[in-house]
Image (cartoon, one colour):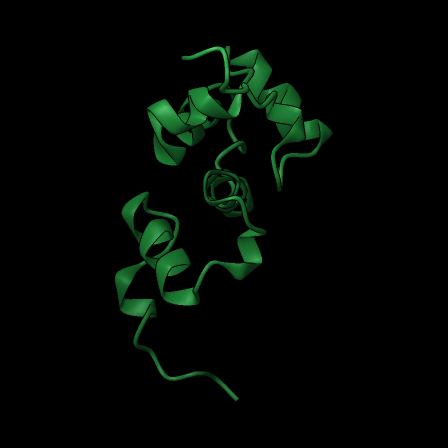
Length: 101
């Protein structure tokens, strides 16, 4: 990293609040660059492996949004769904199912 580049502390990244900041620190991730190097899925899996119940969809989407520099709700639905299917939080058959009324 050159002296002109800045390192973004993880707590300053978009979507990363105090709870996720602490979970990231608990697995040794302290900067956005570390998330970028590993990818949202790998970092999410590190956190998910620390305790049952840590594998929530919002955490994964928050990490992906942080990498993109945008709120996770701004990620197109199709891209969010694809990410959730990739990690097994959503079944692919749900993607094309008609909406219930």
